[in-house]
Length: 255
Image (cartoon, rainbow, N blue to C red; front, top):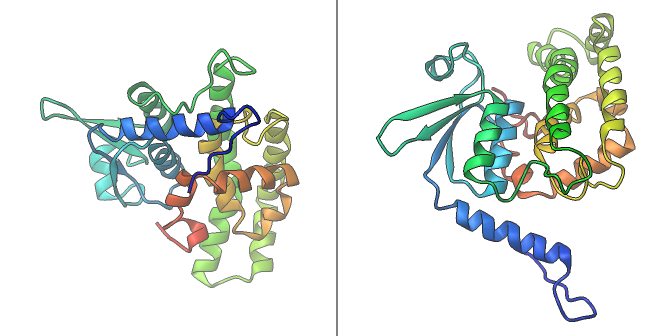
């Protein structure tokens, strides 16, 4: 339940007005046509788009399929996730692929609440997309490819102990790449927070959070700093994160 607080002048605080604006925007976006999100909730980048759809109040249904499945192959030439199926007035559908392309489309058709930066923010808007690119290019391989997926595969196969899996990850360079990414990405957070670029959530948060959420389920979460933990806790208070929790690794989901 949203609570409104009055300041000493008897008017709403700036934060309360901001929350009211978000709710009004979500109601307005509910009049958009229903979209279809192709991708398993287990997919981190699919979750990124789902978080944004929920936060923006855009109606959608989700087809839960793993990457490189027959269903994914129908919508993406390489079977990757996510895909957003966009209904068109002429009855045709547009299959929009790749997370950053989908993000830019959603910002155009549902500009509020904003998940991008504007010139009034503390830095140029392109810095936010720079951060997203770093997460996609370096964060995903370091966290998912180097640590989380080997952990999940090893445990599901029931062939190795936790210690053996840890040693395999270390020998493959996974721990070094993980620590390198975490060490280098944290200084890019703006100091005031609670989000990456200040007082409100942006696409930077939506892209990074699902990776950190997966990392928090494995022993290598010991390398996550206090600053990142505090940020993750702030993210967990949001409706987008809460509504997209089922089916994730933390919820004991699988593709």
